[in-house]
Amino acid sequence: MRVLIEVVHIAIGLIAATAIGWAAAWSYPRATQDIWLVTFVAMALVVLMGIGPIRRAYAIDRAKLDRKSKDVANG
Image 1: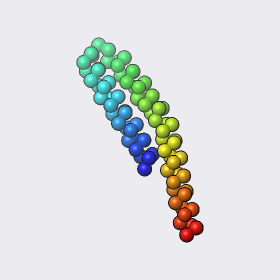
Image 2: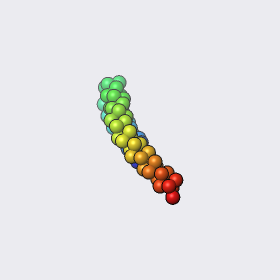
Image 3: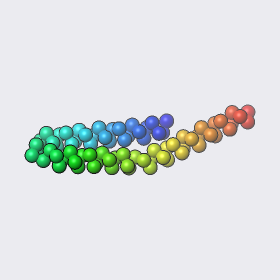
Image 4: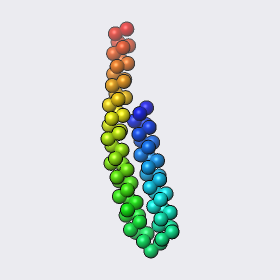
């Protein structure tokens, strides 16, 4: 469940970056290419910054599942 939450956070970050980039490009058309370049870099950074939390969430979820399977196996 924690992994899903982290993936949703990344998706929200990507949507927000796209919306800000779109609004900035719309408001200043002369710099559209530069604005989208910065937007794509920001989106890549959002994904890169989300890798650590996803790995931690995966480890916690996996440990929790392993603990439950051991409890069931031991009765």
